[in-house]
Length: 222
Image (cartoon, rainbow, N blue to C red; front, side, top):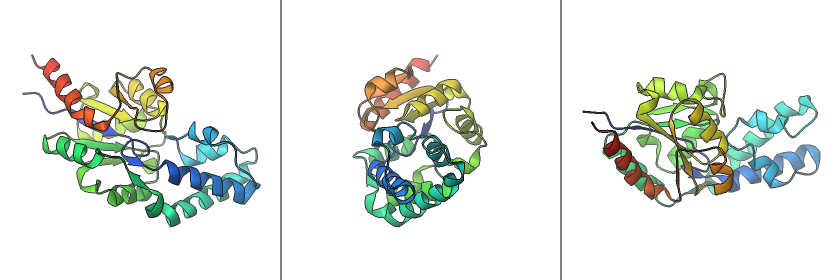
C-alpha cells in the first residue's frame, strides 16, 4: 500500500501570517541605518530568500549588510509575538493531515530558532517532523537543495511529496526538486506572480489542501 504523501511547507506567508512583522522589521532597519526605506514591494519580492540576501540586494555598501541584519533580527525578536498572526484554518488543517499519517516538513530560509519560535507561537511545533532552516543547507530557495534536504530527512522520494509555498521562490525550488508544488494564494503574492512560475496546483485557502491530497493519492493508486 502506498505511503501517505509527505507534505512540505514554507513558513512565512504559508503557515504563519508574518507579513506585518516582516515589513515593520524591514522599515525599522532601513530607516535606522539609511534614514529611509525602499518601497515595501521591493522587500516583498525577496521574501522566501535569506535575510542577508534580501538586504544585500538593496544596499550598495557591503559593510552595512551584517549590522543591518543584526538590527532586523533584534527588532523582529522584540516584536515577534505581538505582530505574528495565525492564518485561519492552518492549525486545524495541518492537524488533520498529521492525523492521516502524512509526514510533515518545514522548508524555510529563516534561522531555525526564529522558525521554531513562530511554530510554538502558533501551536504548530508538535505537528512538524523535520525543519530545514537557513542553517540546514549551504544553498537556499529558489535553489532546490533545501527541498531535497527535507525529502532526505523524511526518507521519501520527490514523487512522494508536495511542497506548499506562497512565494515564487518556493515554487521554483520545488519544481527544480521534481516535487509537485502547491501555490498558496492566501499569502502576500499575487495569483499572477505565482502562476507565472508554473505551480502544479493553486489553492485559495489551506482548507482546500486535504481534498487535493486525497485526490492525488486516489489517482496514484494502481
